[in-house]
Image 1 (cartoon, rainbow, N blue to C red):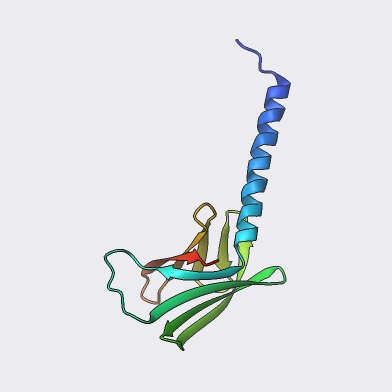
Image 2: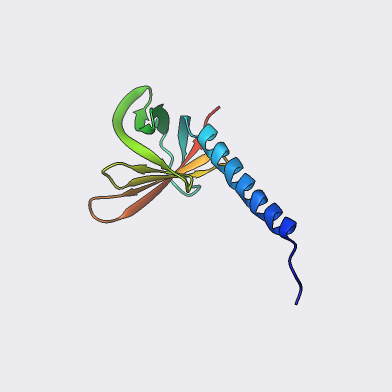
Length: 128
């Protein structure tokens, strides 16, 4: 039986902890900002219709705003408060929305449970 080296075990633990810290930092720095909705390739695109998702810090919580535009006019706007979870996602407080962050592509997946029990997933990509 091979005896493991204590220093190798400590190195492995430190490496995992640093990786988690880097991912956590990347998610928190990416979070505030404005994201544009990315439609699927086979979806019907209507000229002048756009959906944005903006996230702002509100103390220890986050204010998420989903805004729909037709041309330059705001047609719908939804606001909710969310809490950041260590799993790199935002959970709506008192609701059924969840934002999953993809730090590499700088995008967010917004998952919503509708009143009919259906789950919708929308992709939003961060604008610079």
